[in-house]
Image 1: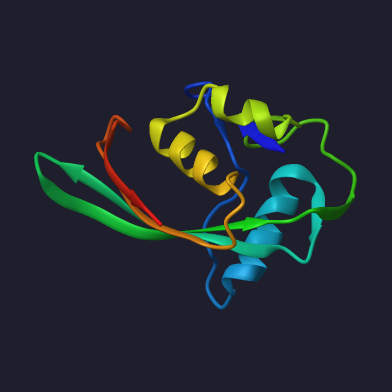
Image 2: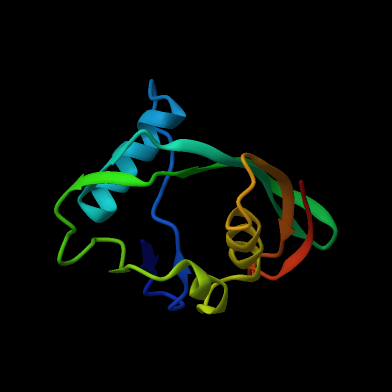
Length: 135
Protein backbone atom coordinates (compact mmCIF):
# COMPACT_ATOMS: atom_id res chain seq x y z
CA UNK A 1 0.00 0.00 0.00
CA UNK A 2 1.47 3.31 -1.06
CA UNK A 3 0.29 6.89 -0.98
CA UNK A 4 0.71 9.29 -3.91
CA UNK A 5 1.41 12.79 -2.57
CA UNK A 6 -0.29 15.49 -4.65
CA UNK A 7 2.53 18.08 -4.47
CA UNK A 8 4.98 16.16 -6.70
CA UNK A 9 3.03 13.04 -7.61
CA UNK A 10 5.57 10.86 -5.81
CA UNK A 11 4.63 7.58 -4.13
CA UNK A 12 5.54 7.23 -0.44
CA UNK A 13 4.78 4.89 2.42
CA UNK A 14 1.94 6.12 4.65
CA UNK A 15 3.23 7.51 7.92
CA UNK A 16 3.94 10.58 9.97
CA UNK A 17 5.27 12.01 13.18
CA UNK A 18 5.21 10.63 16.72
CA UNK A 19 2.86 12.59 18.98
CA UNK A 20 3.74 13.49 22.62
CA UNK A 21 3.47 10.52 25.02
CA UNK A 22 3.21 8.10 22.07
CA UNK A 23 5.60 5.23 21.31
CA UNK A 24 6.94 4.73 17.79
CA UNK A 25 4.78 1.61 17.49
CA UNK A 26 1.66 3.50 18.57
CA UNK A 27 2.51 6.25 16.08
CA UNK A 28 2.84 3.90 13.10
CA UNK A 29 -0.50 2.27 13.89
CA UNK A 30 -2.28 5.61 14.39
CA UNK A 31 -0.77 7.29 11.32
CA UNK A 32 -1.44 4.29 9.08
CA UNK A 33 -5.08 4.12 10.17
CA UNK A 34 -5.54 7.90 9.75
CA UNK A 35 -4.08 7.87 6.24
CA UNK A 36 -5.48 4.56 4.93
CA UNK A 37 -8.36 3.46 7.18
CA UNK A 38 -6.57 0.14 7.73
CA UNK A 39 -5.60 -1.16 11.17
CA UNK A 40 -2.24 -2.92 11.20
CA UNK A 41 -1.72 -6.21 13.02
CA UNK A 42 1.68 -6.80 14.59
CA UNK A 43 3.78 -4.31 12.59
CA UNK A 44 7.50 -5.18 12.80
CA UNK A 45 10.34 -2.70 12.79
CA UNK A 46 12.37 -3.21 9.61
CA UNK A 47 14.31 0.04 9.18
CA UNK A 48 15.90 2.79 11.25
CA UNK A 49 17.25 5.70 9.22
CA UNK A 50 18.96 8.96 10.14
CA UNK A 51 17.60 11.57 7.73
CA UNK A 52 19.74 14.67 7.15
CA UNK A 53 18.84 17.86 5.33
CA UNK A 54 22.10 19.40 4.08
CA UNK A 55 22.47 22.81 2.43
CA UNK A 56 25.78 24.19 1.12
CA UNK A 57 27.63 21.42 2.95
CA UNK A 58 26.07 22.26 6.32
CA UNK A 59 23.68 20.06 8.29
CA UNK A 60 20.43 22.02 8.70
CA UNK A 61 18.12 19.39 10.13
CA UNK A 62 18.42 15.79 11.30
CA UNK A 63 15.85 13.29 12.53
CA UNK A 64 15.16 9.58 12.76
CA UNK A 65 12.74 7.67 10.55
CA UNK A 66 11.44 4.28 11.69
CA UNK A 67 10.02 1.97 9.04
CA UNK A 68 7.66 -0.91 9.78
CA UNK A 69 6.31 -3.84 7.81
CA UNK A 70 2.98 -5.54 8.45
CA UNK A 71 1.51 -8.44 6.52
CA UNK A 72 -1.89 -8.45 8.21
CA UNK A 73 -4.48 -5.76 8.72
CA UNK A 74 -8.21 -5.26 9.05
CA UNK A 75 -10.62 -2.45 8.38
CA UNK A 76 -11.83 -0.71 5.25
CA UNK A 77 -9.52 1.15 2.88
CA UNK A 78 -10.50 4.81 2.69
CA UNK A 79 -12.03 5.82 -0.64
CA UNK A 80 -10.13 9.11 -0.28
CA UNK A 81 -7.18 9.76 2.02
CA UNK A 82 -6.61 13.29 3.33
CA UNK A 83 -2.94 12.82 2.36
CA UNK A 84 -3.33 11.76 -1.31
CA UNK A 85 -4.17 8.82 -3.55
CA UNK A 86 -3.95 5.30 -2.07
CA UNK A 87 -3.06 2.27 -4.18
CA UNK A 88 -1.77 -1.28 -3.80
CA UNK A 89 1.34 -2.02 -5.89
CA UNK A 90 3.06 -5.34 -6.64
CA UNK A 91 6.38 -5.48 -4.76
CA UNK A 92 8.38 -5.99 -7.97
CA UNK A 93 7.02 -2.70 -9.37
CA UNK A 94 7.64 -0.45 -6.35
CA UNK A 95 11.19 0.39 -7.49
CA UNK A 96 9.95 1.82 -10.79
CA UNK A 97 7.26 4.14 -9.38
CA UNK A 98 7.79 7.92 -9.37
CA UNK A 99 9.32 8.79 -5.99
CA UNK A 100 12.27 10.66 -4.49
CA UNK A 101 15.74 9.16 -4.91
CA UNK A 102 15.91 8.80 -1.14
CA UNK A 103 12.64 6.82 -0.91
CA UNK A 104 13.67 4.65 -3.88
CA UNK A 105 16.88 3.67 -2.04
CA UNK A 106 14.93 2.87 1.13
CA UNK A 107 12.20 0.90 -0.71
CA UNK A 108 14.77 -1.10 -2.68
CA UNK A 109 16.84 -1.87 0.39
CA UNK A 110 13.84 -2.89 2.52
CA UNK A 111 12.35 -5.07 -0.22
CA UNK A 112 15.56 -7.13 -0.35
CA UNK A 113 14.16 -8.94 2.71
CA UNK A 114 16.61 -7.99 5.44
CA UNK A 115 15.36 -8.31 9.02
CA UNK A 116 16.49 -4.80 9.99
CA UNK A 117 18.03 -2.09 7.82
CA UNK A 118 19.94 0.79 9.35
CA UNK A 119 21.24 3.77 7.46
CA UNK A 120 21.94 7.46 7.01
CA UNK A 121 20.67 9.50 4.08
CA UNK A 122 21.64 13.07 3.27
CA UNK A 123 19.61 15.14 0.87
CA UNK A 124 19.11 18.73 -0.28
CA UNK A 125 16.11 21.01 0.19
CA UNK A 126 15.08 20.01 -3.38
CA UNK A 127 15.12 16.36 -2.20
CA UNK A 128 18.18 15.48 -4.24
CA UNK A 129 19.94 12.52 -2.63
CA UNK A 130 23.47 13.67 -1.76
CA UNK A 131 24.79 10.54 -0.03
CA UNK A 132 23.55 7.37 1.61
CA UNK A 133 24.94 4.56 3.73
CA UNK A 134 22.62 1.59 4.24
CA UNK A 135 23.35 -1.60 6.17
